[in-house]
Image (tube, rainbow, N blue to C red; front, side, top):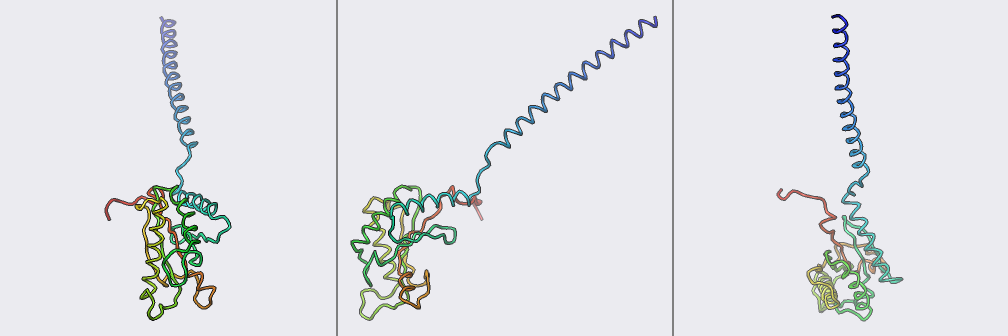
Length: 212
């Protein structure tokens, strides 16, 4: 009788151990699967910050402008989060005029070739002058009018070269956003310029709520 009870106890203990071992094996398998999934997620490339995406895009665009213009004098700067291509007025317009020179047409033709490669972008063509006031009897009343008309002339020319008119707009800032001082002729020359201001695409902008 006692031997039977001992044997039964041993058998029951063995069955319990098998169940526990089975559960341990199942848990171990699930843990391994979770660890593998976590490792796979960690291996995925994290999305780049918006600022990095924008900077990479601007670097590519800047290189395209440099390739298009070669040794011609253009300056490319970042201002208030936007890329700005600066073209000197000396090669675009004659003094006090808003009609493009032959050199100016050639310069903007190169620019048009770059803009057409980026149909999803918007560009602002901005005119700037130095602080020299308009002369009495001049065609333009002031530098506002001169800078705005030069920018508009440039936009219209770009459109004739195939740039989508929905991509470009014009603005004149007169002498109020100088690139340098106005004390010397060299400084004044830097201020007399046309700028191509590059706006970021939706992908390059931070996400804002739909309502404020």
